[in-house]
Image (cartoon, rainbow, N blue to C red; front, side, top):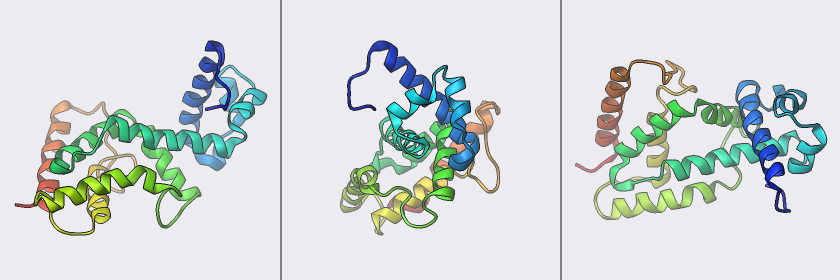
Length: 195
């Protein structure tokens, strides 16, 4: 967000840029995204985009980090029921496959190894603390909290747009999604929750 408060019109333009750029980056990645397409679809101009974000790379960063914040807000962790958390993540990936595609592009074009973002602690610390507390309470199996979190997230993404087996969509039959939720819930429960 710009340093200065935006007018209502400026806020609307800013949001159009974010929405349009999210689609553009999700489809084409950082290198393939075109500022010209973003500003045309957002009914604005390059000068406005650059005034708000600086450049294309900073625009991607703002959108990607915003998507991580959104997932934390929309799907907060419940370390005492990691199976339910995995199912809620699965549902969010169905609702917003573009957010998963952004993470994939970030991995492919920015950070091929290690944490996906430089300040991953900001996004992960509260989750890791919650898992550690659940381990101390005997609810989650022993192990490195980061690895437990990674396994649960990976299982929740089994049918996401980054799956190497099958990418699900929200348009598929409800009973198919419910069957996957049941399998996911039980698999996570057996894998990481204490008996």
